[in-house]
Figure (cartoon, rainbow, N blue to C red):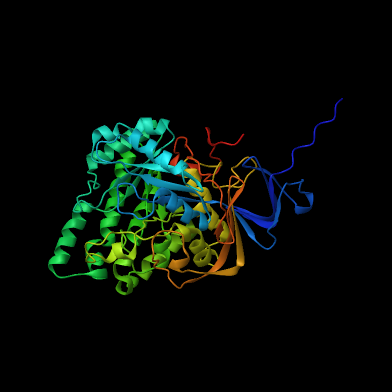
Length: 479
């Protein structure tokens, strides 16, 4: 009988680190071949590799999945998709979920094709897309084709009517999007604020001379967020559609999602690092640079959100990266300045430093929030968000003993400011690998042709994908 041929050597080995998943950690080496995880085991048992990288004393995490990022697409954001992806890579994000926005008269399919082509021409990391829903029934009819193309998530804005952006989608259109998405395997993402009430409250605040943090407090109080969360929950339940609440900020809104889940409703909850680390007081200091929607809240709400992180009421953390220059944010009055701040590069570093390193939550929980859970609910797991044999070889090497000084000048977004200027963070991202290839090493981008690919997704399972024993079938399943 002929001898079995020896297996090919690994392409690359990360040797001697601590491998972290959402359920534990182990001292192990991990080997990659052909862009996938091929071997995990004891360091002394590692098979031959073309390149072995010593990561002793380091943490090896799955690449982060940022489920919430904006980029320049018929908007005033300064970062194009490739710029956003490059900034994300420096922060340990290996899969970016960005919002594809169409121009007037462009079909949803055409929008997705255009953005996919743009991304594959310049992104250093992999990406997938959310389609933005407008007040247009013809556009909503494009949902089934989008799902067939591997885009299974659809964003609805319940705010911003006064801005004239056409993004405050009325309830009938919201329901139609949910009904259509629910039928064909999609999930609807909702920016939950009562836009019409916000307009009324803002107009009254302006008439009274309110500005800055006071304008935000009066115009976008927690109750308008909680009401819209509750309304979207009922609409999604009626439509039979999984629901994903983006950037939840406050105690009242979290109470609505907890109540709904206790009743068995399918609701995924996301928050963002800024809502876990910054309070409304920073608006008094930074002005429009700290203007986001929903707005930053008081310290009381931060503590409630950390409690939600620990008890599982919050499922994912996304950056809500929205890039502007300081000049763009300040060229008009505070009231007229755009909402949003850069953040994808700090998603994982902030969660590690302010969460795991400070004992607010565990490192394993951080991996769940920024790696596993976004991949699960959006239909990417276990190809993304995990380091299992057969998964894409997306990994982050983090030095827990090092420190990171946050400086706008040292970040890789085209935004020239950060509200975290001067913060000293525990830990430093030493290396970022995408499908086994080193993309970032020691804070520097490895110069090579862009390797990012569009990742088509299967049916979105919503929060069911977070339950023990959930079995997924389809293109992103291993084996």
